[in-house]
Image (cartoon, rainbow, N blue to C red; front, side, top):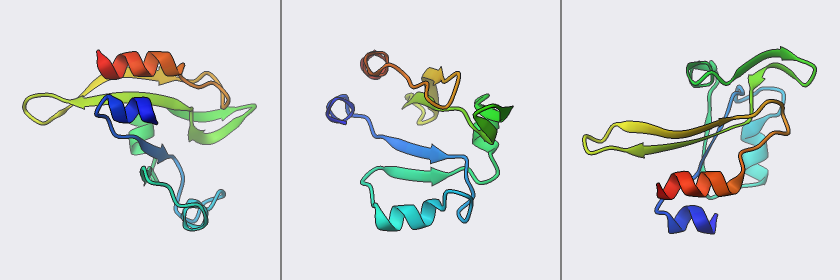
Length: 105
C-alpha cells in the first residue's frame, strides 16, 4: 500500500459478485471496513470486457479470475490500460514488483 501511495496511485477492489451474493460483500464490508474503493461488478460486464470472466473450472464457477490492472489517465482524462495480470487460478496473483514498475513507468 505504501508503494502504491508513493506512486500517486489509488487502489480499488472490484468483485464479480452480487451485493447479496454467496460471499455477502456488503455485510462483510460493514463488519470489516476498508479505506480503498470497493466496487461490485454485479452483472460481470467489466469482468467480461477485460477477459477476466471464469465461467467454469475446478476452482471456479461464474466468477472473475484474480487480476491486477494499472489504469492511468491520459491528458484528455480518459483511462489508459498500462498493465494487466490475469491469474491462471484463484491463487495466482500479480507479482508486486511488476505492479510497482507499471505504476512508475
